[in-house]
Image (cartoon, rainbow, N blue to C red; front, side, top):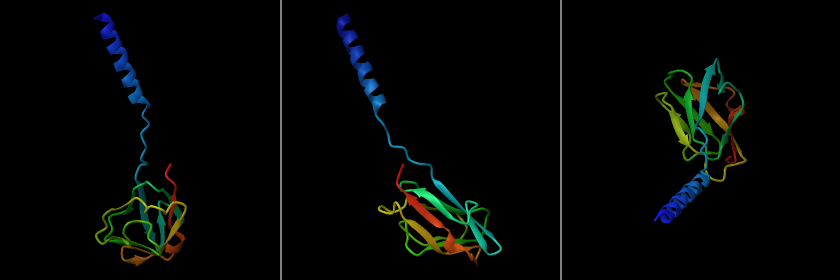
Length: 132
């Protein structure tokens, strides 16, 4: 009987060690794109340029302050729905970039914050990188 319990204990230990070998996929943290307006010039995440996002990364647009509205327009939409529109200034979760967009850059065709057009919208956008 002792040999049976020992064999069972060895088997259970082996099976538990196999479960530890399972390698799960890691999901990147959501990317928050913070939009700011400064006398006609706008920024996203403190930059006038393009923001990198992974193919499997959730993107959330928001403004730095509680503002009445914002809208982000793309010439070609990298997300399931465009434009990114927040008529009440709430954060907008646009989800992950569409399948097949990795390796492409999507510049904004227009950006409005607090009902004011940004003069530099075309210099900003998102670059979709392959998932890590």
